Image (cartoon, rainbow, N blue to C red; front, side):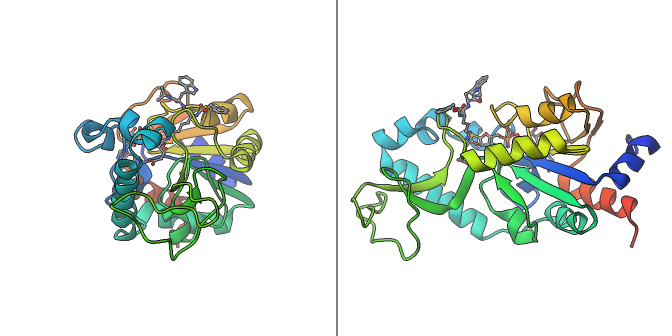
Length: 248
Ligand code: BJW
């Protein structure tokens, strides 16, 4: 926070349109593992190509279904952290406040954020792998650990998340690009900025003249391009920032 100049603080305080672009680091202090952190990230323990591609699901649907069932349970057992809560407070003070998230955990919504665009889907939503329609609880019974079957067409059900090689949901993506292009300020929080096309969102905001501030304990490929970088965690920096912008 000390690394933000008074000029940037006043731009944040006066912004009428603000986008917060979030990644896995946003939820790390809630106890949800990131993907690429060297010791604790999911990809340190699991191969993305075995679990997060349509080919992996076709090859071994039971493995993929069980991995996501484990993650759904993990997320159901955690709470939004002080960073999520700070964003939900901040939204009440800004005319156009949009959270664009790569996260699939639903923690922004649980903290009370109203306008959340999910670029990589949501872990809790289950869809038919053939027709894409949502299937709500109670899901059909599961045979031998494999995914339940669609009640309409019997295709395996899957989580409504975006795997490598799949297109992003069109409405969320269009909405994110529009919000980024119109934003006076964009905050990029807790993302490595390595996964495309989502990683282009902060750059789009920069191209349109926004002030872009990164919040991350580690440098990323975005760090040298942004207006300012704050080295700290989401649950520490965001509440302090919101308090500084409008003390209670
Ligand atoms: C903290 C913290 C704390 C820690 N506080 N911070 C251009 C160039 C190269 C490749 C491509 C390209 N365009 C497309 C590609 C291919 C591919 C891609 O990007 N590959 C790269 C990895 C090389 N992209 C795709 O395949 C995408 N689809 C696509 O392009 O489709 C084309 C198409 C068009 C039309 C028709 C059909 C196809 C889809 C990408 C889907 C990504 N899916 C995943 C899994 C989602 C489901 C699930 O959860 O299982 O999304 S992968 C994973 O990475 C997940 C994340 O959302 C995403 C981004 O990760 P994120 O959030 O940045 O996490 P980490 O772990 O990387 O970083 C955490 C950060 O937090 C770190 O910086 C820490 O320092 C920090 N941190 N503690 C704050 N407390």
